[in-house]
Image 1 (spheres, one colour):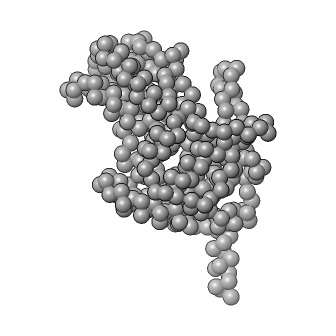
Image 2 (tube, rainbow, N blue to C red):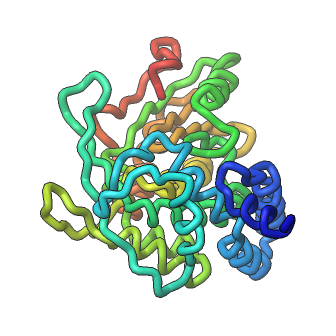
Image 3 (cartoon, rainbow, N blue to C red):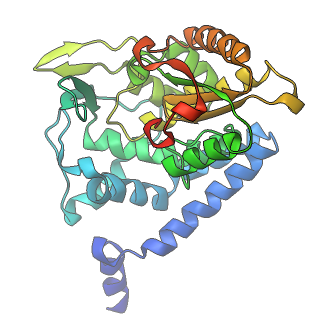
Length: 319
């Protein structure tokens, strides 16, 4: 009798010991992080396989997309929105990170940009794809957190806009500097798929899934469109993929100057600033950035990119 009660409670969504589940996932993520720091790719892949098969990871991913995310009530092409507690366990059981998973196209939703008349497109995946993206993100994120550049602040755990502002302040507070205030044009929509997948260099099932999500296409007003570039904004894993695509920008720019005359790069998602005391160095950095971005299918947005002295810039207006 007591055993039956325990089993019922175990599968009662409201009675799930979430702290225990989170600790189990975090322990695996720490092991992935440490293996990535040591450069042990084989161990990283093995641990990522363990995490993507973990019941705890699947539970946490489903909880995030059905209860915690702001877009939980926005449906994908299947029309499914936030699930009831009784419907969440079946979704957890369905999640499989394999090559055979069938990926659905995203649903196009247009939302207004703050303070403007123009709108930006979101690609809303189905609830199943969102949950599966959550599982893959839990496995990929610690690997990349171990190697991401120090001055990248957007869409990363434990980092935010104010950290980026602080990094800029610390760079300019003692010396006057020139600043390249830059913005990437349609970053999420134009990232080159082939370059991104080469950068990922992940295990076959994860790589196959991500390729499927990138190539799944979009349905806009009942019309299907192929996606040849970009990552769909609205997906759980899209911000991480954008950060992976832009990884290496800071290192490339810093090759311009010796360590004792360091050029500073601070990036928040697709916005970034480059700072140095010499304007000619900043101009060269702008050229280098343009060429580097072209390799991944991106370009600077001319109307939002300019060189100015830090004394005439307001830090709060940069990001």
